[in-house]
Amino acid sequence: MERAIPNLPSETADVVVGGIDLDGRVRSPRGDLSRHPLPTTEKGFDRGFLRRTFVNGTVERRSINSQLENKKSCYEGVQGLIGTPFLFSPGNLIYSESDPTKYLYKIVTGVVRGFKLSTNGRRQIVAFYVPGDLFGFECANDHTLSTEAITRVRARMIKRAAIMADAVQDPNVVRQLWTALSWAQYREQEHILRLGKPARERIASFLSELSRRAPHLGREGIPMPRQDVADYLDLTIETVSRTLTQLKRISAIEISGSRRIIVRDPDLLEKLAEY
Image (cartoon, rainbow, N blue to C red):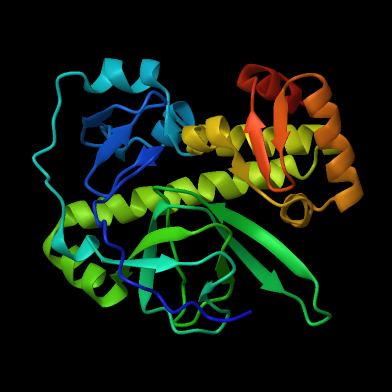
């Protein structure tokens, strides 16, 4: 795999689809934005907020609107979190395992896979990142995973040192990074639970999650090779192909070519994902 040689895109406007933008805005499943401070209790931050209102990165309108209807945040963004825009072609590495952790990455458009290669060459996909996701966090100075563009990806590279400097000056930066990490942890916990389900429930749950996190992907087609699905869900490619055919037969999804899955009935996928 060749490392990407990023090019500066002609269009640099920041876009977020699903989840919380880095300037403290919430995007609902319908796409509208509302600024808000994160909810707190007498003991501090309301840790139940993610569980009650987040569904893998999207926010349920019925929960957030009633709490925050008339509240607005004066926070207008932090310069250090804007980042530098880059383009990565499909198949390009964004960073490799053991690379220095100099940047965080925020996806504007496209889909990225995070993976690790074992000593025998087996690939284990551990995460997928969609527009709005912030990734590249590490507890040490080197990356423990590799990331690779599945599609053409437009992303913003944010210097780690700039974020740390801004965090010292502005507590909003700390709050936003904490939210991004909590969001990622929530998805990881959900994935661990998903791996205990039968094959059909795993795949239905996975497709349902991606379509919630990035609704436009569900409508236009999730660009996901079958081998990626198999590596992520710990299934064989034969099982994935057979299960996708079953989901297509009951009109839950539509398959366009070999790498695009269109969600036709998200409610049905939700029901199938229940265990």
